[in-house]
Amino acid sequence: MWAQNASVKVGSQSKVSFVVENGHKTTGILDSGAEVSFIDVSLTLHVDSPVVPATLALSAAGGSGLKVLGETTISLSHPNNPEKKFPHILLVTADTGYDLVLGQDFLKLKDPVVQYHYREDRLVVADLPVFHCWYDDGRKPMRVALLRHTKVTKRSRTLLRVDVDGVGEEETVILRRNFLRAHPGLAVPDQIVTVRAGVTIIEVLNVSQQDLQLGAESFLTFAEPASRVASVTAVTANVTTSTPPQNPPPSPSLPKVDLSHIPPEVRGKYESLLREYSDLWSHFRFDIGELRLNGQPYEVRIPSHQMEPRQSALPPTRPCEEGD
Image (cartoon, rainbow, N blue to C red):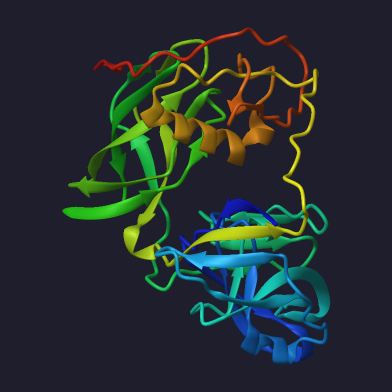
């Protein structure tokens, strides 16, 4: 039996009220860091669908196993319109400390279309009434912006001084991973930083082939209190097969990237960003060569094919240049 690893992090515990089958109300956690959704076994008492064997197993941060009893399909609805339901498949767990966690598999649904506007505290699912979200601590995500005009050199890792709104004298916060549409090629990795008097230093990556000019007060990402980090951090998918999984043949229509020249200490961050946001990487926005993971080609989903890629290598870290 061969195993495939994926990540699950219950991070920003934004909550929302749902009605599950048979009119039972529950509170779910929306987590964009979790790849799969799961439900506590106690809620299956209110679900008509049977619990069937699951192909996934959860692990905690310390490596201890969490009980996965199977998986089931539940129907969720809005408290103001319980008759209109939408189904979703979830793992059935025990002793996780959470009744319902909805991860990327839910937040990226296309049928029905799901849109999570975390800054506006609302969740939109198809044509249902808008779901209003909240945090237990009552705080909204905090805006992170540049303090001054800055040039980020091409193909580099850079430290930037930024302003974080809503922070007092000192606080540790989590930065949301983000790609900036206004500056294609600039990525903000997820990271934990300490903010003092509203100011901190964060890391950004410029993976484009050109220098980027960022104006003062340019928006970069959102930050949240570090207290919102929770315990479930890993998922292992057990693939029941007697042979190892085969890598798909490389597609000639996809651009290629070579990350072999990236310093080892930052290569993992590049690979992580590419995996999670592979659908955003296009010929039009990026000059990228061949990406190989563990010696095998890594395919990236590309929405446009307007330009031929150029082979390139990414040099080591370069300092940024700041101006008044």
